[in-house]
Image 1 (cartoon, rainbow, N blue to C red):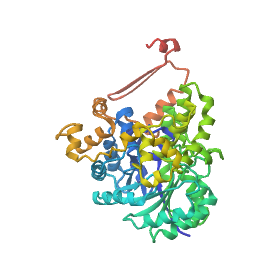
Image 2: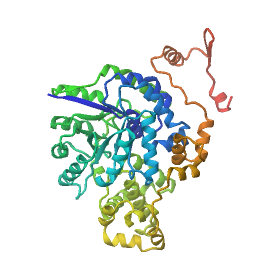
Image 3: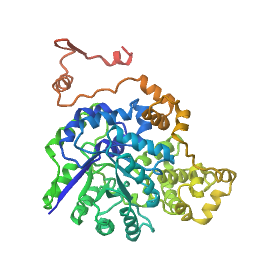
Image 4: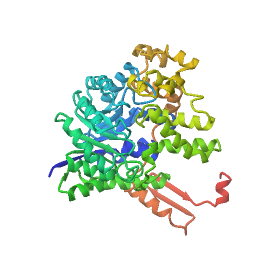
Length: 493
């Protein structure tokens, strides 16, 4: 039938979905070269959201991760996921330009670009900057469900995206909302309007339908699919590469991937998951209520946590119902960062205070003012928009304009003329003190591969209960293991 190409999401979206961006550089390096042999058409590695987490919580330099992985993955293009309006911050042009330049300099070769409202005229500037930096840009067309997100809507967006200077288009379904039925109507529209450009599909397994949608898309003509390697597949992550390869082959297609090269990678990450107590992805059960509120999985866990802290866990159902109402009043924004957070936070505030729109955040006011896009603001319910803007804070923010500092101004603010471009960006996203703390933490922790003989030996020995002491000696290497009683451990000895 046809050749099918695979983009790996394990190192970026897979771990974001299941490990809360907790994958460390030392977990990736031991198996990067093996992943490179698999024949992926690209591998996602980082996004703008990773910088703050890596520096502040993992105490790791994300640029060092990129360099180390790019040295080991020389055949597989590494990919960055970003956009000028796709995060909580509206990135100044100078920051986005420098970010694209440093991605290219450190080993990134592709960037998948998004606009949270699918405004392709806004995406055009990001595409131009990425091209000038030497990156291959890919245009995301984000899928959503609402009265306005029809096949005709997506036909228009696909036509606009195809007119951009991009390598190909990507139907991005971050919420896992696609169904096989909708895939059958949407994919032909995307391919018809793509002006001959290749199309990629990126969907999650949040509702348990991800792998079925990928196979439908393949049958309809899509040649590039995004998958993950277990244990970082399924759940709210992506379909397993092994499952999609097997079924694509059964349907008569030729998967352009070396499965045997990936199996040790799956074993490596499974071993780490068990050692570190990290989640292992399992197929999700279908939940029809998800199609009503469309709250992403990570945001759902945050909602539960926040309500629990307030002793209001029982209010979750009410918050989700209010989320549906707020989204409609906001003009049906796509439930993707940052819009899903705007909608969810407002719904939560309405429920907690017992009065709708009594309090609103600055971000919601900016949304209503059109600072995130006039199309979004004009689609709002007029009465709700008027209520949001009828307050002193809205009049203040109406005079505010997103700052557009030069690189020189950024240097003065974040460390002076001697700071490197890489460190300037780290400080911009995470803060000066946090970067200093990261540097003081030293090199990333190493994680030996599960297939390493010493690791295997230690794992097997620690399972044996009959020995209290174990001593391993080989040359200059010496390791002493001692089993301690619970009382001793609790005393801190």
